[in-house]
Length: 239
Image (cartoon, rainbow, N blue to C red; front, side, top):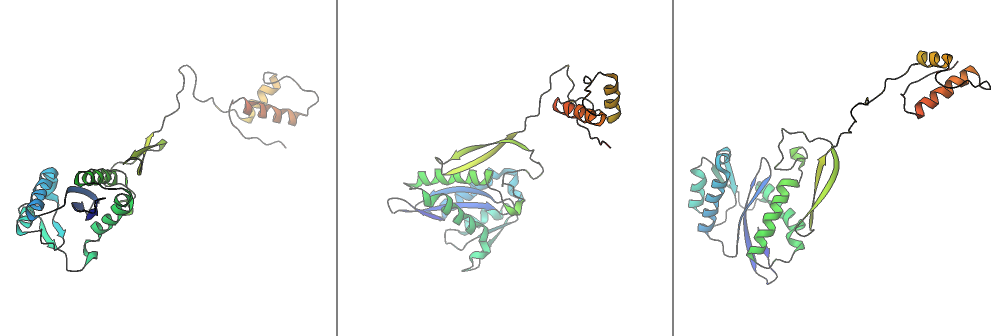
């Protein structure tokens, strides 16, 4: 991958993608990359991966002359087979080609890059955003850094965090707050059925007598009044 600065200077970016998780590692930026520079970045990558370095069986790379025999020996010593891509076959390394397009569309084409340090900072920040907050359909809409064994809880609210001065937005969920009930008061009162309602109405404890209402209308009026006061939800039928 390469990028242009405002001073019409071309910079080259060396990055690695883990195919299984789509995690991207931006290793370095240079205006004059050499074989020794690329080989040293490969050693640094294996040191950063630690115990995870032994999990990778294959490395797919292009046929650039900077990938020397010393570069291949670094991964061969780790038990990783190096597979050069066929000539003029960009689809053989389609995952990295797609990330290059995404990084240019969402990031570098919208900024004015001034130099190596600026481009390295921008791409490192974008790679963190890509690994932490970009969902993938092949990962069941999870980001590369998400744990597949963790099921996210329902979100109460969603908060936004701006990246690269507002060029990118990240959205995070906050835990759902459960309702708090005061001590000494029941969380919910028991429901009242039609028999209890009729017994209270006949004894005169529920509402005062209404001589102008029929017995069926009195029962319906009592049920509506209880529902408005929150004394329980129930169903009834008159007739």
